[in-house]
Image (cartoon, rainbow, N blue to C red; front, side, top):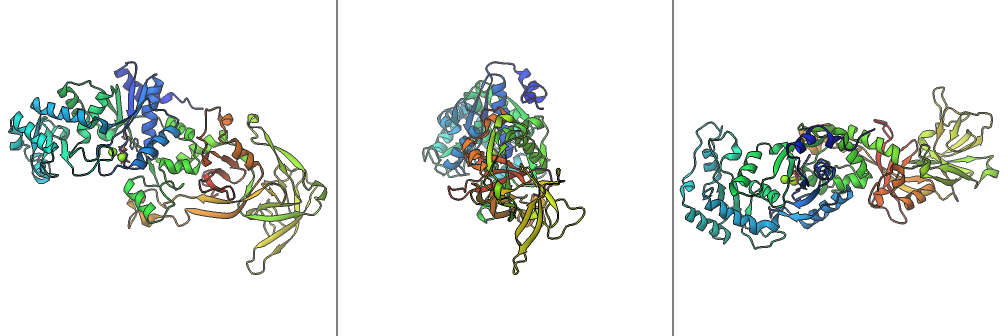
Length: 565
Ligand code: ATP
Ligand code: MG
Ligand code: MG
C-alpha cells in the first residue's frame, strides 16, 4: 500500500521545504487559460496544492492571463472546475491581469533604477547582440541601452499610450550580458500588442512578458515556494534578479520534472487538429489525455492522485507509458467500485427446465471483497443472455465455456447449464438462440460466465464504447507522415446492443461510491462517477452522452493488461 504523503515527506519536496522551512507555506498553480489542462498538469496541481496542504498552508489558483491572443472564458471555467474535481480548493483565485497597473508601475521603477530601457531593435539585431547565429560572436548592447532615464520613461509612456505599433518598441531589462546564462541578456519585459484582452478589454496597449510577470505576481501573492517545471531552471536567475532589483518580497523558485505520457499527444495544436478533423468526439473524448477526457472516461480523481504519488516527484522528467497509467487506475478501481454483470454482444439462452425458477430473486453482493458495499437482488429468468464469445458451435477438449453437450457455470446461479442445441440465421450465419438444460450432476464447472436476465428481470439494453489507444505507436509525434498517420482505426469499438443487469440502477442511484474507498468522494457526482466492474469484461463508467432512455457506457480500463477486452 501507498503512503499518500510519501512525496512530501522525503526526497525532492522535503529538500525544497527544508531550504525555506517557513509557516505558513503559500504556493500557486499558475496555468495560462489558453487550453484545457492535461494529465501533466495534474502533477503540477498535486505538487502545488499538495505541498501547501501538507505544510498546513495555502495554494492559489492563478490564471496567468497576460497574453491577450489565446485566452478564452471557457478555459478559465474548465480549469477551475477540474482543480475542484481533483479535490483541491484554492485559497484564492487570482489573475495576473489584475496586476497590470502594479506591474506597469514597476516597469517605470525599473527604468528609474536605470535597470530598464526601451529598445527598437528587430529580431535580427537582437540575435546578433546575443552572439549571432551560433551564439559564438561577441555579445554587445545596442545604443538604446545608453538612453537616459528620462528618455526611457517618456518612451515607455508612449508605448503605454499607443504611440508605437507592435514591434516598434519594447521594454528591456538591463541585466548582465557578460553572464553565461541567456536569461540575463536583457530580456523583454513589456511588448506592444494591439489586441483586446479578455478581462481588461482595450485598456492596455502593452502587455508584460512571462519573465517580467511571473516572479512579480509570485511576490505580490507572498508565494513562499514557487514550484515549476525544469524548463525554468535557467530562468531562476532572471526570476531572482528582477525581484531583488525592484526590492520586492522574494519568493523561492525550485524546479521539478514534467510528467509526460508516451503513446499519445498532449500539445494543444495536435489536439485541436484531432478535434477539428473529427478523429475524436471533442476535447473530452475518452481516448484523449486532457483532464476533461480522463474524467469523461470515468477515471476517478483519486486514481490520478494515487498515480502521481506512486511516481513521486524528482527533478527528472518522467515519461510514462499509457499501460502503466492504466495499471495504476485498474488497481484503484479494483478496490473501490461495485461489480455487476454485463454482456457486450448478447445471445439468448433458453433454459428448458427452468420453469419453476423463472422470476426468482438471487441475492448478490456488490463486491466479494468489501461487504460494506452491500447486496442487491437480480432476477433469474428462463431466458438469459450470455456473450456471443462464450458460446461455440462445435466443442473441443481445450474449450471450457458453452457448446452443445458442454457444461458451464452461470455466475451466482446454483446449477450449471449444458447446451443442447442452437439456431442460426441463414443469411448472417450468426447464432440467434441457444437452448440448454440444467446440469445437476456437475457440481463444479471449470468456468463460470456472466449473464443478464431476460424479459421482466429489470435488465436493460445499453450502448458500450470500448476505447483502445488512439495511436498505433509509442511516439505518434515522430510517426512517418505525421501523427495523423499513426491513428489506430480500431480505437473506438461500439457495442450498440449490450445488456446490463438490474443492479445498474442502484449503482447509478448511489454514485459516487465513497463507502468503497473510505474516501470523501470518488467523483463529483457527474455521469462518469457511475462506475463499476463488469465481471469478466472490464471497468466501465457512464458517458455524458447518456439520457434517461439511453445509457452509454465507456470502458475505463480492461480487467487485465493487454487482455484485448
Ligand atoms: P502546455 O504547453 O502543455 O500547456 P505549459 O507549461 O504551457 O504546458 P501552463 O498552462 O502554462 O502549461 O502550465 C501551468 C503549470 O503547469 C506550469 O507551472 C507548468 O510548469 C505546469 N505543467 C505544464 N505541463 C506540465 C507537465 N507535463 N508536467 C508537470 N507540470 C506541468
Ligand atoms: Mg500552457
Ligand atoms: Mg505556458
